[in-house]
Image 1 (cartoon, rainbow, N blue to C red):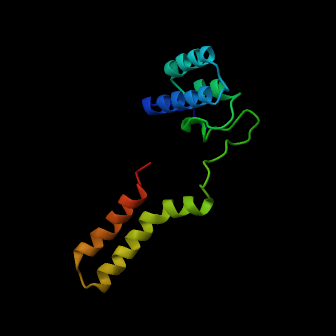
Image 2: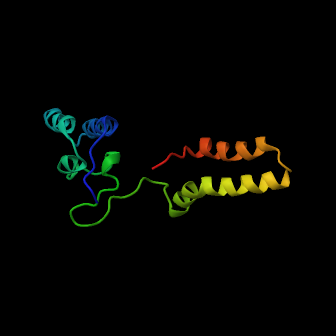
Image 3: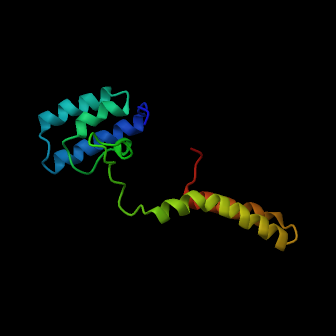
Amino acid sequence: MTDMRLSDDERQDALDVLSEHVRTGRLDVDEYGTRSAKVTAAKRVSDLLPLFDDLPSPRPSALLTVPRDNGAPVARPVGESPLTRWALRSAVPIAVVLAIAVFVLSRGRLILVFALPLAVLLITGWRRR
């Protein structure tokens, strides 16, 4: 896996997770200050790994797909089953096929052809990766 650069949103998420660990008593205020300064200065995902290696869940979203040192991947968020991932990944192509079928069956009423994929895009929050 490549060592991707962090966005401002990913840094903010990491700071929010650190705050949660302070709230639950896993970190004291001094340690939070030290780690939050390092999060703010972090440029890459690998810069975050040592800051959260000794902490349990929750973890920053940038670290959810990074394998740990022992090679075991970090757990996915609860409720994200393979079927759910497949459905979200397949929703747009299925909607396009259905739109073509609706176009043929409706004898050219274009509003239905454009409305179905658009509705699926809006509902699933699909975005280009």
